[in-house]
Length: 610
Ligand SMILES: [Zn+2]
Image (tube, rainbow, N blue to C red; front, side, top):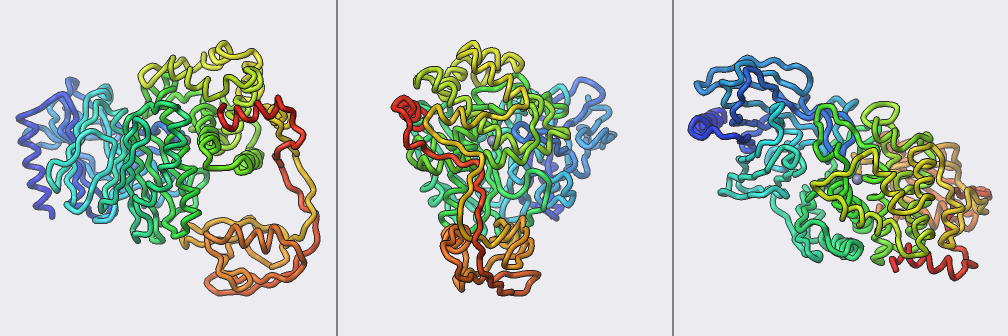
């Protein structure tokens, strides 16, 4: 194995001495992976100064947290043309300082897998990390493998991947197969390079066309439970809905790279972002999702997450501030506008499904209700201030609110624009107008955006921004929902039967339903009890909702219910009789049956788009 590596080394040196060029020529060796570490070689661009700093990113676009990818680089070495090692000092977690850099022709190091990181205090959310699982899956997020030299971030990059012949590398990068064991990809600069993940695994791909855009789905499902063809089936209607929402799509190709995690993948308990999810890029998105057989659960999850990630092609790709345009990977200056990048994206992800007929008005109301409930868990704070300081506390731990209150800010803006324009100009129209003004290479000025939106629309919109987005005030749901003839009730008393206080979640390791946030209850349930059966019927992801609606939440009589749970490895049977109780339903949203024709007209505009 080592000998094999040596051959690569020699070939490399020859190439370098003959063709030293003003570019990065990386080689990633996925043929000789040992201990979940991959070897990286770099034929360096000519450096004119005597000292060079090789920089790995601390923060990457779209992740909004400091992860220090230099932590995963091991045994970093730099060499001159004669193969002599040059002095290297590690300045901090992410920076390697090389002396006599004007002599340097190549660099070699190994990269550790982030998914296996034992330091859970700073765990990298899987879609933004790296997975090195020999002969199974290599998830290559370039920012977790490759760096750049300070002052040379804008040079072109070539990446040669030495790979097992049985694997296919799906990526939005230009280039591809040289021969069965070698791929060659190209990128114009580091910023675009790290915007393009590559997933290597046994090939399972499917393609389809949405309007002017070619879409590829690549799936890794270790047990073969989920296929690219199946995912394509879920994504085609979403694609059609998004195509209809946009009119013309702003990109002509797009990749969905999907890793379905089986039981062998450990999902550490981490504060903030953990579990399943995805990370967006300009021409792709990378997904880390559970490998479960439950068709409905997977379908809903894939549709919601994919719609969100895909909609990022609107913002930030086509609409972003200068902070994102020339991203600083070491000390990023964060934009004020997470309400836009994440909030509006999340809002459109659900609105486009509503407009495309994938979800009903009631489903949409339920999403909104869940968002209001979700937002109430976070502290009131200025969204613009939180965005700018998001990588630090106390803001970082509030990050997930960008998907809750952020989404509701999008909805509130749409409702107000709908009213003020009398059903002619909503948030979609505003966003499309902004993308005409700006674009992938034309950023807006971060500090002027709110002023600009106000000038393009109405003074009342400026007041709303000042109060709810820059300020700490809550959205006045009652007043805003009334615009489209929806009722809102902060809380309502509902008569029914109750077994007490408990929630349900997913045990990621076992892929089973699990009781969580367990309070006082009639069954004697404890935190983390795994649910196996309800009244002798096995409870699966598929039937869980129906089982809970029939026997627990929507119970219509006082007959006893028996749960079979697993607690610390042993099965337990718990039987209980419910008590009559008035339940408090929070943040209820529903149609007002007496809505005026004016309200119904505005509702049509917002929900249907015409
Ligand atoms: Zn997002």
